[in-house]
Image (tube, rainbow, N blue to C red; front, side, top):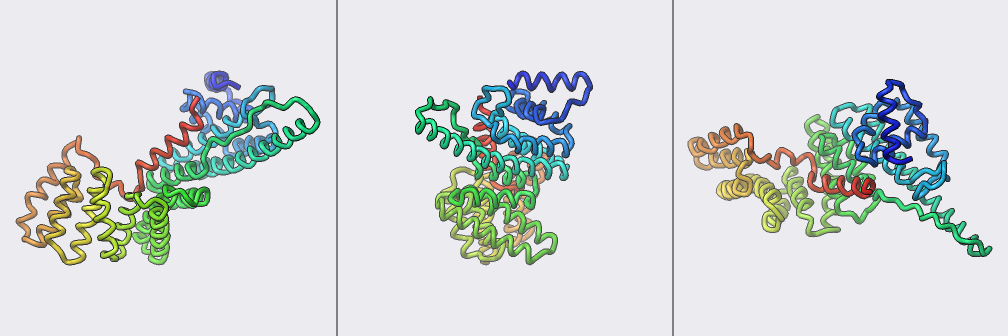
Length: 376
């Protein structure tokens, strides 16, 4: 079924006010529409389906694994890319529901997405195995070979789980993100980015558990975060984001000497202003912990140079100046902070977004996963 026809069916059903039949054919039509420019229409349509109707369509689909094809040619063929589009459709709706705090809907669609992806990969592997067996038999008995292209997985499993984990963390739900982060590491243990996201998820969880007084859980999460960040650096020693976050984690548990060397390296080798700013901000805290107030003032000042709109650096610098030179020394900075807070065009302080994970990495992975599957 073409994307144009699928979209027409959806529009006709909505225009007539008649609730369409919720079966496998219509489910595949919705997924096909998601591969078209009418992606928003497909999102709205799938949210009209009841969970039991979606489950029935998924059961029917699992019973038709032998009909999967790289390209649907004959009546009854199921285009494998349509199945993968359905995977991304459920993930898309699940993440949007999570952001809207519709937790039951988010859980259902994210779970449906994962289950469908796992099934599709097994079904594709079976189809490839059958095709190889058939080709061998054709060769053995002198029959003309079958020319159906081999089914190819377009969704990278590690990237998919990284996209879900990073997105769930980015909207503030590290507990939802954790199983996806673990899935990314399982899918590719040599992927430094998967370990980085796992470290960020566990570090954010440690903060959450700490605020709730769950000290034992917080400690376990911090240990998991440290392991993951060290694994990321072992795989990619140049990954400054992992080094920055490991330094901050060690600072939080008062391993200040270890933190200092890591943060100093990020300051020296950071690729842009954001990591340098954060490294200097955290390094200033290290200097305070080590009893070096003048060094703290210098570092906070350099952090402010790297990110002039930073309220966190202004406040930290004001506090350090007050401790070293008295209250009068910080009055100008406090006034400047209040003034900057009123400017609508000020750059967002990266510190306020820090606990939401590596947003640039998450954005890049999301774009890669969706573009790879939905490209023409």
